[in-house]
Image (cartoon, rainbow, N blue to C red; front, side):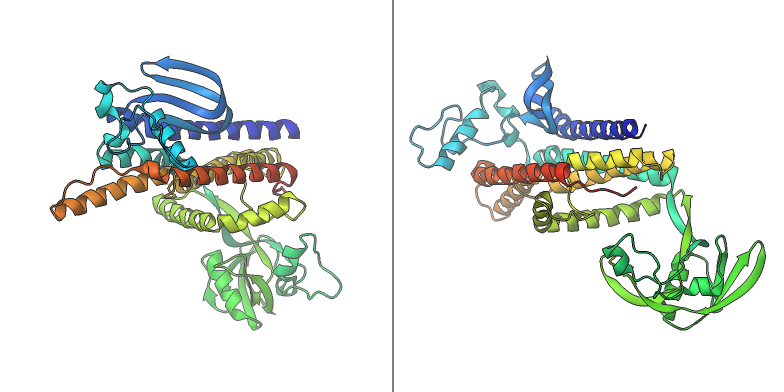
Length: 437
């Protein structure tokens, strides 16, 4: 049953990813067709064609490698100034010069003179901007719908000041991080919570005379108390009582950065978690937090790939390591097959994972480098600025931005992305992240 659940989780998550890719490409194709751009191909996947059909001037299909997709917008590259776009120059010198010339010529294989106005490069900059932002913005919408839907309809587990578990002893958090199997040993100090006589299901209502309305408030009071006297007001079986002890100073994760550790006051209780539905304000704030965290992850990606390389060849794989679609699918399989979560939490976890992947794909595609969507977005914005400055200064229209000149960068970037993808997939196969569920 566990293997069946794992396989089902992987398959369903993979289907969700493929659907996200397909919708991303629709985000490019639909506005392009609305603006009159000639669209000759719409494919999900790369490599050998498994199935295709032609509707009008567009061929729709599925290819063998489901790691992306593409839409063929005719005329993405403008012709070289003063040259016939349908003819390849014979006097090119240099590898990149010839590649650029070949790429220009390939843009016009399916164009006749009557379709000149349907070429992508000839469209106004704002139409180019809409077409190229359409794909990643679809991923943003998917992320908001998936994550927001879970938060608002299913709910989010929030801690409340009710004791779920009492620690037997004081174990520094950095020691637990280094050895997750670490348990109480003979030399460890008895936890203040155990010393005070706190029990499971006790509701903590005050701390040193201050009313406690939430777990966050209680956490702040405990941490700030260091090793001082603690008078803990609780409700036990409907009866109020006050328990007394001294908190102790212990190494705990920093609330602002969980990767850092600080010495703060420690009591030794784990809160009860209650699932609560959230509202639009929570969704907006959380999406902003997720977006910032994803942006920071993108900035750190080159550095983190070093760790992935080491993990792929025998090193330790970090829990927050970057993953490929293979790794994300394996995580979905682990969520689906664990016995530690109820069915609702499994479904919610997989949906949230898919939402996070969509948010990452969106922000990644906004990077202003070809062949990513962001490279074309940057070209459209540059064209708008350049033409606007020329118009204000009364100078001639400088014309369309020639993104073909950036093809060497695009080829280099594509090579880097392929290498990164292969390395991530290999690492996810030989040394995958395991949730420990």
